[in-house]
Length: 296
Image (cartoon, rainbow, N blue to C red):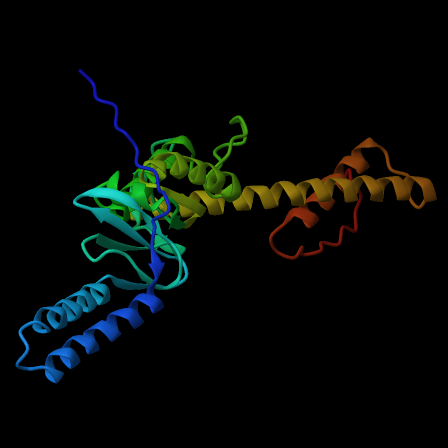
């Protein structure tokens, strides 16, 4: 048999102006001893004097203060009576239980987690999350410890996000995909959506969520660095070769148009080969003077 969890909902609490109650309480506290002191032998005035002092003390005990973006949850014998968000000095009946809760924006940087990405590669990942309590009743009564709850849900969401994305792009033959390193905005958006759904039960709002740390795990970091370096070299080589081919085409076209030299197919092939060697070489070319002919 399943039992559906009933969610709490924040409601405004009834409270009074604390300054007025403080003034009345202080007057009664002062009036009690004065009445007794003026008539020390009168048993009739003893009770009113003690009563005035006791009521004044009770009034003072019901006072509390709230700063901006703070709330006070009011309870009576375990029953929730509302949350007071009015700033300044406030007052409720002294037998009401009060629990203060901060409604300010908070910043959480998670611990570095070692998880596997979509391809199974071990990576280290951490997130920075900006959050705040939106519903004080849910935060206080629907979860055991809302701050610890948020911490756990951030770690869980990070593990889930990492399993849906690869750290970086693979071979060029792979289908284009979103990755943790190259698509930070998309990953951050999905992380925030994931967290919003997970922490809603605790009355918490997620304002922002982003990856704060992303790296390969130490055991494969060296190998992955060599791979990235190799991919960078190959990419640079492709660009150099592409540019060299364009320059050779332009050179042959200019020579042919101006009639500087008459090149047959063999000489064109030799010139193309020499130009590509010069343009694509890592070191400066060493010229060789040929005093003979192409055909020896």
